[in-house]
Image (tube, rainbow, N blue to C red):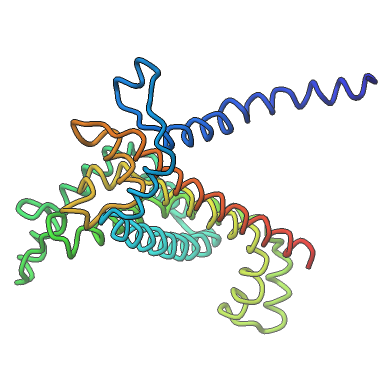
Length: 293
């Protein structure tokens, strides 16, 4: 082989090793787990019974499946919609320099900087039925308190609100960076043409921000799809399964009970992986179309 070919192999080798070690092997291992009956004893002995697609059949026929599917869709779509919309609004607002703009922009990053266990515990305290600040405010207004975290009607809404709060800083930072790359003369031309602020946003800002917006939505989707900590800290997926998503269902099967069920947890995890890969493929296809046009 030529020197150039050896050099190419040398540059590619670390990348291939990284992909195999941290992507391909874990994916293979997760699929293997879902096709066997792994128990804590089986992990020690290395002898797990092959069950084929039984774990997937049990998952799809479980009463939890339809509830988890519904909750996952609602949790993901509502969270992303509000995170992106609020983040975009703040990014456009902070594009203008005004007194204390940098300080306010930094303060909006606080939810992103806090450990998730702190954020989850804080929201659990705020929404506590007996001693929470939210219910205290409702009582002061003469309204009845709400069982935010212990009622099946409000548990999912509560964790969605907390997750929206957590995701706004990420959307703000990425979209603000995208806005900084839009040339100022484009806005000057729109101003000369007499375009209103609303018209400028729809005809100038949004079209030029599409590539950044697309990757923001994709990353937000993948992150929200796998959220466990904030839900587990606040409601543990309950009461019942009212706030259970695929991610919390998988975690509960593996670690949330006294009898770990690693193989069913892996089966649920594979569904999440498939959804994430599908969204990634859709993004790549959309990006190619945008580049071609």
